[in-house]
Length: 274
Length: 216
Image 1 (cartoon, rainbow over the protein chains, first blue to last red):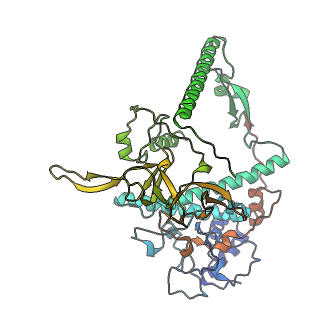
Image 2 (cartoon, rainbow over the protein chains, first blue to last red):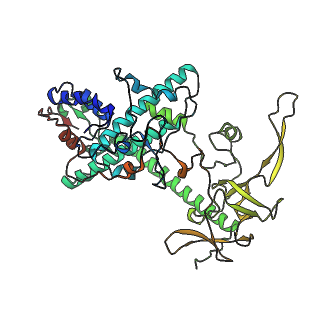
Image 3 (cartoon, rainbow over the protein chains, first blue to last red):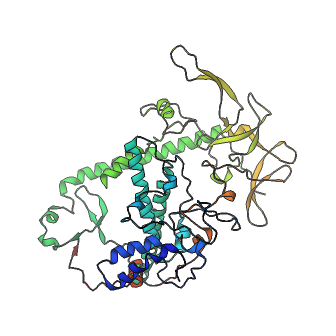
């Protein structure tokens, strides 16, 4: 069920994917480009909503009754504009914006994805969205670099910030899910192993483990690290503690003084809520 | 990682504890000129108002109770929470020259001065007089400002966004996801990590075993 012209040229690559595992990565990227649903259970006849899905940005309208309008007035209501209508020239055009936006100083863009919206999406959708966002980020970075080269202001720099924020939120959501699963299955709070260790200066801190190919007793550089405090450091620790206590006392007195001064200057009359 | 941290430190403006906030934002050159890093000025005491008690919002019409323009109504353009200031449009102005170069004295403009929150009061829309305002909850559970004298609800002012977008009139671009797609729920909770699920869907089978590694 592929009603639109854009989809036809990708079907051979999907068949190729089944046979060759080498070209798998390439076909994966192509699949994400086209933003297919891997489980094709969805009816693709409503092309206006399904094809252009999981685009980098979104803007939620307050009234769902507002109609969607398209960039090019020439396209009819039943037809959707695919991301590229010409033959894919090695995909380099994905690094550049749509030709209509070339040379414009203001390109309008929607709002970034929020964490609340991302939490309702499945893992597969998040995976696809990540790559869509990544490609948009690359597009904006090339645009920024080219603008720097031409010594011209980049059009709408807030787009990069929006994409960055969306990606950060996506990562947060994925990490949340991973943490929940890990807590449930193993009870470990942290993904990366570590331990509380004391360093040479007397501080106890959370030391995060690193991954090595050889065990610790064969690692010469690791053995030179000292996770204990020598005895001659003790007087310095005591002086440090004294300094810390003095600072705390100073802060407390300062806080008390400011509070008394504020009370004197602003005799606040508390009005009880009726 | 350290390099990026350094760069971000250079980009971000550090505000010391005894920074005296003015009308300019701390990262602007004007603010940097007025508050260079080494300066120390007499401390200003600002009445602490809790964030939930703040009743004057940007775009509200308020009346000035004290000062040069006493009794006048004005629209709030800017709110400075750190000094409890409110900037009104065209009121409480003083005149100055701007853009002075060489012999040319510059343009004579009227620039507004900020007013303390204590010296303004919100206007009741029913009788157009200044009132005290309290935050209360409606029947639906919405938090609104209620005037203490008449009991009328003062609605929240409609402010234009800085980028000029009006949400009701927004039309999705080519790269924007439609509202239905955004709000569609596709998440099915399962005991699989993202990697496992995606590998299953794509039919990737990882038969290799990881090499022995040590964590310490």
